[in-house]
Length: 422
Image 1 (cartoon, helix red, strand yellow):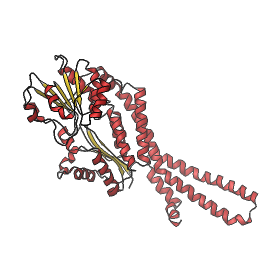
Image 2 (cartoon, rainbow, N blue to C red):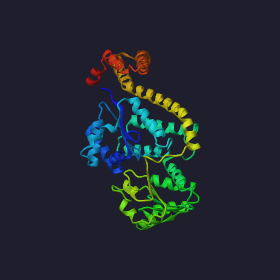
Image 3 (tube, one colour):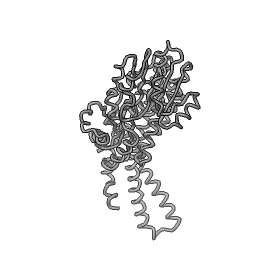
Image 4 (cartoon, one colour):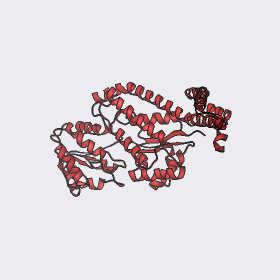
C-alpha cells in the first residue's frame, strides 16, 4: 500500500472549549506520545500541535491510524472514555487534504482570529519537537520548510499579517470596550507564558490602564514589567491583587481552576469585575458568573470587533489562498517525483551493472584506447535507454499514474529480482 500523509484534528471549529481542554496536550505529553508512535507504529514522520484552539496529529503511514492515535491520547491523559470523543475529531486520510489543512493552520487561516501570528511559532515548536526525536524524515522536512517559505511570502506580499489582530489583541479590544466608562481601569494579568506575554505587550493599546502582572516565576514577570513599565506583584500576593483589580486576565496553566466562585464570593465587588480566561484547560471556574458583578469571557467567546486590521486581513485571504495553492502544487509535484526516484535509481544501477559486466567480460582483449572508446559508447547508449522510461515515469507522476508505471518498469527490467540477486 502507498504511504500517505494523514492528520486528525480537534479544534474550535468542531469542539467547545470544555472538550478541547480535556484533549489538550502539554510538552511532556506530546513528547511521550511521539515516542509511542515511533515505537508502536515505526513512524518516521509525525508532528503534534496542541494550542488553546486545537490539538492535531500529522503523520505518514500506509494505514489510517486515527483511532489508535486517539486511544494513545486517551491513555496519556488517563481518559477511559476517550472513544466518546471520536466524533469531535476531523480526519484527513489523503495527502492533499492533510497537507492543505497543515498549510491553512500554519498560515492562520483556521485561527479564531484570522491571521493570528502566534500559530506560526507554535507550528515551528511542534516541528522542532519532532526533529529532536528524529521523527521528521525527508518528507516532513521538505513540507515544513515549504510552509515556512510560504509564510514568509505571505508576510512580504500581502496585508494578511498587517496590524495586531490576534487572540491577544482581541482580548485588549474586549477590555477596552467593557472598561470605556471606567477611569484608569486596574488590570491584573496572571501568567506570562506565550499568550500572557503577548497580551502584556498589547496593553500599550490601553494607555490609561493601570496594569499589574504576576507570574509563578517572578523574574519572568519582572523582565516584562521592566520592558512595559508595569508593576509586578509577587505570586503569593495574587489574591490581594485580584481583590483590587477591575479586570483579571488569566493565562496560567494548571490542571484545576485557579480562580473559583468560592474565592470571588469573598470579594467586595462595587460595580463589576471582568474576568478573561485565556487558558486551556480553563483556569477560571465557569460558575464565577453566579457572583453578582462578575463577567466572564473565555477563548471561545472572545470576539474581536470588526477592526480595519481584521477587514484588511479578510480582504487578503483570496491572495493568501492563491499563494498556498501554488506552494502545495509545487510540493505535491516534488512528492510525486520522490515516489519514482527509487525506481529511477534502481533502473540506473541495473543498467550500469549490466554495462560493467559486459565490459569486464571483454576487458582482457582491449587496449587502453579501445576501452576508453567502448566505455564512452556504452555510457551514451545507457543514457539513451534510460531516457524514455525516466520521461514516462515523470509524466506518469503528473497524471497520478506513477504506481502503475513503477510496476510496469519493474516487471519489464525485472528490477526486484536483480536487487534480490545482489
